[in-house]
Image 1: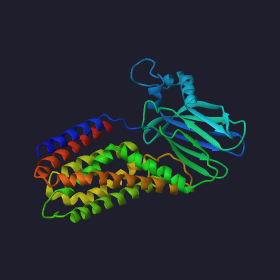
Image 2: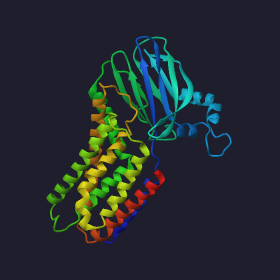
Image 3: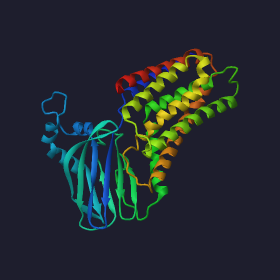
Image 4: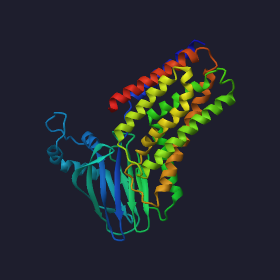
Length: 363
């Protein structure tokens, strides 16, 4: 059975290598108002770093951007954005105009904001087609809010869903389902969250006097996962509804710290009892991280509930899918004598080191 530890080590190495080099996706924001007439007006916010990757801005090549350099490229920037976002209304194309840029800040990061307006030949249902940054960032997302005379709409555009058409009737279920997918996607591409979840699972399958049966393992995991779920649901709700607002960088640093702490706790068996308060305490932190995926989305009071409910259910669905996938493997591995003294500490240390690397990067 010596091949099994080697296989785990190989999987760990390849996973850590892929995760360490992964690019975290960016988010754009589009807020529109489509009235009874034929005009569509609003605002587009895109991350400055996304624009800089797509349009040469650093004219002197010194690695720093000045406002003069950005203004000097306002024509190419407007042309680039105009080629990547299109509106139609009532089936007819609406020529869009991208206004002058100004600097904004979202979650502590610099953004460029633009007034957007489109003169449509006729009224009718609005369609938005968006294709910016997808070629360079497969995880890029555009959060869209559209105010019409009848309702407030919220949606997300992504590489696989690049077009949205105003529905004839507002459906809370459709909105919830759409953001359920976004919640699942956010977890499956949130490597730090996945690593923390794995760290909570690793000690649960170690055979000891306190854990002698599958039922005991299941009860232990149920308590841990419930604590984590309740905690991040609380802060996700508070942050997504703007009751509490925190900047992104300290939250991302704290999430990285959670990996370090969880990894170290796994090395000392008598500290395993602290996993329950650990799951709840850092679950609050991870909830703020989840909320960043929805920050800035102007849903209006009528739409916030299906957006928040759908996203949270999507997060929990993804969590359970990860647990269902990994638990049988870990449970089977826990039967062997090499798991507790070698494999589990090695995995925990690797995760803690990964957390330390992320912490340094995010600081």
